[in-house]
Length: 122
Image: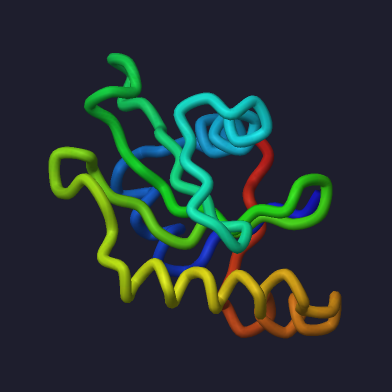
């Protein structure tokens, strides 16, 4: 499976010291339906702990299709907001349909242009 981060998400994750291992755990939690919410159209909200449990941690928005492709698009602290606005969710759902239909050549172009980045191995 190909796992990527958007440019914005890469900066946000680095600023908050979120490891690749925690991001991979979030994907695993989607598969196990643990601490995740299916928002529809292959868009999920998943929890990532700060180290003291998941309750006070981060929330991430992930475009994910099992055994195919994954993109971390957005993150926020739970203390900052509980949910994302409906118009933003709608945008994520639209982008999910586009992203999951990209050809390998499209992904290569996005990588070359610095719009997305591969998830580094832990």
